Length: 202
Image: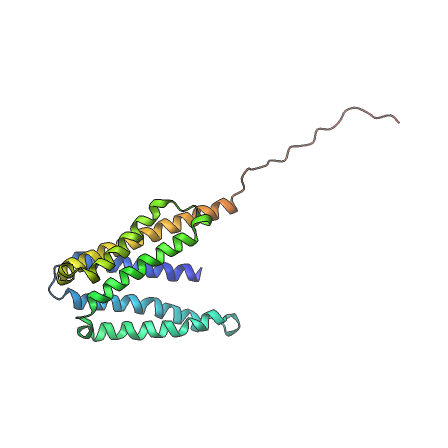
């Protein structure tokens, strides 16, 4: 349940970030605001994870919990710097956004490939992740696109929405599998046994 909550929070933050980038892609200082949004994206899941590990009883903590502390602290520090010193990341923000899209797209492509048998993944599920990864590659390699900051920000916002759409598809596929496992295939109603009126004489 806690893992689902973290994934939900991450998706909500990415959804809000995508909407904000789409709405304000024409603003002159959009890169500075984009840095702050990305900083929040790194910070919020990290803060939630650290709080959950901290409040959990020591006996209930696993090695995986402790292994996740270091990346969470790193994400928290990185996000904090991005929010406070956004101007330091102004020049490299486009590169970060392109790399982010590639990572998000590849994440879903790999997850869908690994879950194809268990979740009955359809071929068109790969469309959005492929588009997201491709947009990331184009924003890093195509010079005219890279020079148009407003267009890159708009594409990034749209791709974040596509990422959430793919996450929704995966959630619905997992939910169908869970319901198929927990729901009985056929409800069997016990029938009363009729009394035999005949008398057996030995």
